[in-house]
Amino acid sequence: MDSLITAAARALAAGDLLGALKRVALRDDPPALALRGIAMAQLGELDRAKVLIKSAARAFGPKEAVARARCVVAEAEIALVSRDLGWPAPALDAACKALEAHGDMVNAAHARNLAARRLLLIGRLDEAERVLSGLDPSPLPPASRAGYELTLAGIAVRRLKTNEARAAFAKAAAAARQADIPALTAEVESAASVLNTPAARMITRSGERLARLDEVEALLASGALVVDACRNVVRDNRTMIPLATRPILFALARALGEAWPGDVSRDELLKCAFNARHADESHRARLRVEIGRLRAKLRKLAEVNATKRGFVLAPHHAENLVVLAPPVDEKNAAVLAFLSDGEAWSSSALAIVLGTSPRTVQRALEQLAAAGKVQAFGRGRARRWTTSSVPGFPTTLLLPGPLPGD
Image 1 (cartoon, helix red, strand yellow):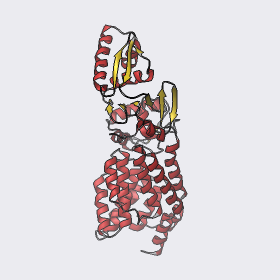
Image 2 (image 1 turned 90 degrees about the horizontal axis):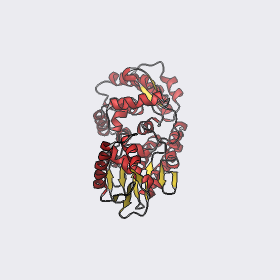
Image 3 (image 1 turned 30 degrees about the horizontal axis):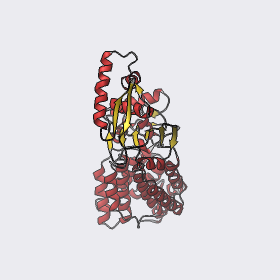
Image 4 (image 1 turned 90 degrees about the vertical axis):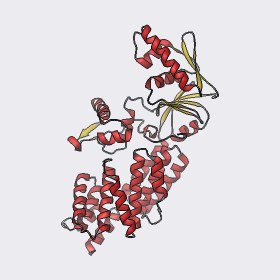
């Protein structure tokens, strides 16, 4: 490798992107194309970066397996940053194995961390942990080690293990300072801020207040009966009853939870469950059916008792009942929670992480755009969606992945 390529690579590692580009801007040999692609990606020119990386991979000969594998890893990282979640994951695994076979353990570890980050993003936490368990972070340079710690912190945050998350963020911050890359330090600080920002609203008999993640963690371990409107479940510290596929039942449970220890009138329940402004006998009959189904669902945790004017929720063992709601009431809150990470998302990528159809996501995006909360750029398959910061978002409680007790 010639001196200019070596100098450009060192400049990239130190975060000096313009210095790296000055050394290789006029060259079109494979190593220069690869370094230019990486520099352009770090400058945010992702489309141009993809073209350069692909050109470099094609230009490397069949005997340059390590260089080709490194290009695949760089392409995978660009795909992750640009939220191209349909990028073929097996290609990254094959590149990782090739790097390990040729003794490039640093880039192999970086490839595994990228795979874990993708799994984290789509909520497959167990698989992400398995990938990281086989990764030795000791050979990683400071910048890559910061990325590794951020992945561990992300898993801990999703599992509501705030002490583990705080420790991982601290290690990531130390690695970022050692790398001396301002952009990386800012990224770590931004990611760590999730521990100090409101994640949900707690609604109790005494009113409501915003709560941080550590407070939500303490609540779920306290033995209180929790009607969780972030995940659409009813739970205590031992039992969880999912109602995400039963929106009417959850609407009834939430209404009863917010009124506890008082009752809710039948007319109010009809409005919240069926949006019935003028209820007739058919609505009342349907309410009786749905209340019966809710009783059956919640029988391990609480009774749903009839009163003169409606119904009341009566926990079996819990002395307290709390409704956990998103910090901002928004019909499309889950979509906003992802868009608020500052990245540009395609509707197909949002559909993958939310586990729903692309058309459902497109309708949500159109509604948010009409309300001025999101904006789009590009056309066709290149269309991406972003949003300015929405007060109270994001909340990790709306992101995919199991909660404690799942």
